[in-house]
Length: 353
Image (tube, rainbow, N blue to C red):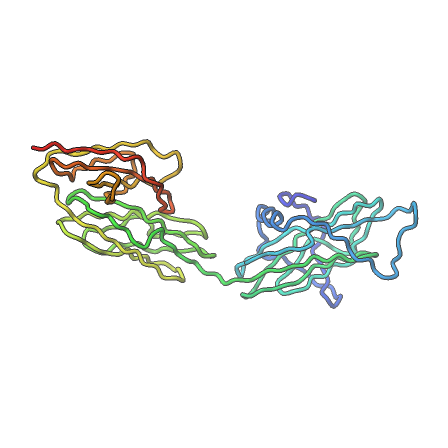
């Protein structure tokens, strides 16, 4: 089988329709060589023995003959966005001891095309011939068909299936609620929201803005995301007074779905009866993370309240009261906003004045 990464098709594009009349074949939007390799890998390479034509006879003992096989025998193109093309290479192999001849190639089925072979075409003994077969849907819906290769003595058929799907960008935020918990007045806190294009077309995000007292957002505006690409938006809560606050994250884009991200937080004042703070440090995660959640409780073993998402491996808690003992744990957070388990617990007792 010739490697699809370095295709070599030296013949003129041509073919025959089911009526036997010449027709030109085309390969619009031919996928890259890398895509050929991936598709070919998924389809597999299974030899398919052709059916012998009636009256063709066979070779007598000791007489040289061609022995042609075709692979793969079945190709499933899966879902293909309308207006794009997926391609797989089909290979003919002559394992015999004399040259064989391809007399005709016929494609059948909506959206299926081939290119690169002119008939009649000879395949030398011990050689192979490869050509791409493509699925190029012009509308949504399933399709089935075949590519049939005929020689002077046999015919070989590759079964084809595929589904055309409509183009649609989709946006998926990593969370529907950003909760800042208690944030000291005058000490802003930031948390990330990851926006991902889960559709099958380019997503254009024109703006990302935050509403609500004390909330702001940066990043994500004027961004184009290909399918499966992501962008991180930093949401900040900077309360100017004590009290609970709510808001939302507005995302303007060409996505065909709707999303909502709620924001909440509570502004608290620094206790006036304490001049102390607790400095926390921990070992960074060995895996890729976007930050660490710091939790605090007043009972050993929890429950804990979330304080902040810190992007470094340290945090200083200045919102403490004299004479109180606090218990802390930390979790690591990846780009999908998935948290690890709690770290080991540490405690700190604030001296009494």
